[in-house]
Amino acid sequence: MAVPWSSPVRFVECDQQGVVFNAHYLVWADEASTLWWASLGLPWDELSARVEPVVKASALEWSSSARWGDTVTVDAAAERLGRTSVTVRFTVRVGERVCCVIRTTYVGTAGGASAPWPDDVRERLEAALSAG
Image 1 (cartoon, rainbow, N blue to C red):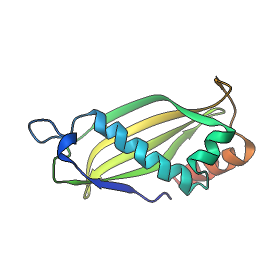
Image 2: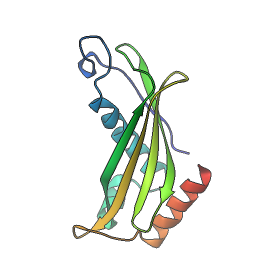
Image 3: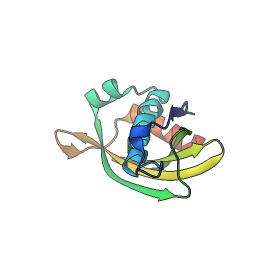
Image 4: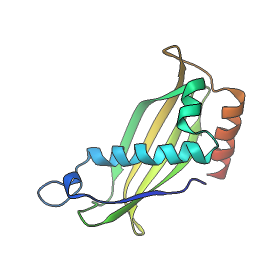
């Protein structure tokens, strides 16, 4: 399981009501993704030299707001694996309270086109999917 990423909510990430602006949830998921890939033994620089994962889609579902002064924690888990893609679920929390769930689909690419995951990468993604 990946080490969760966490950070205090910075003033600059909030609107005038002190609530986190929506786009920052995606930034946090992106930060957490680096730790998630590395937890699979696939550090981003090594992985992208072989098959470069690119974001195809992200969907966000909010349940409550993170606010200035909170500390957010983002957990990541594989949710679906395809031939050339993987969907990762990022859960953003403040303490035990879920603020947002983000589902991001990455597609492996080579030479600008989608490409199947190399066998060793697929094995690690399958293991992550099984671990839930």
